[in-house]
Image (cartoon, rainbow, N blue to C red; front, top):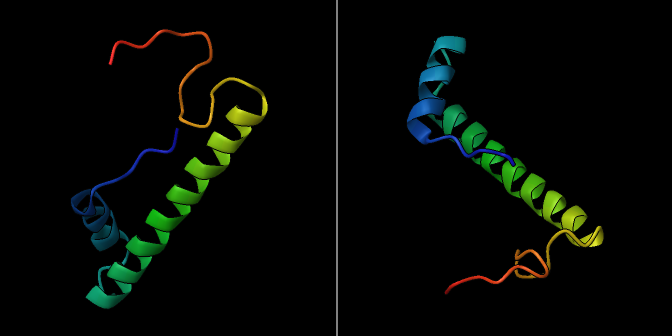
Length: 67
């Protein structure tokens, strides 16, 4: 799965890579990366549903869950 990074992790990486960039640039890039991760999770879930590995609720068919 696609792992979320915290803003703290991202900002440390960002400041090393782009020391002269503005805070606004950093916030915009962080938002874009978060949206990309959400899209990737959606695509992965759709593929798992297509192949019958999970149902619409994200549960594996035939597995009994204690809720």
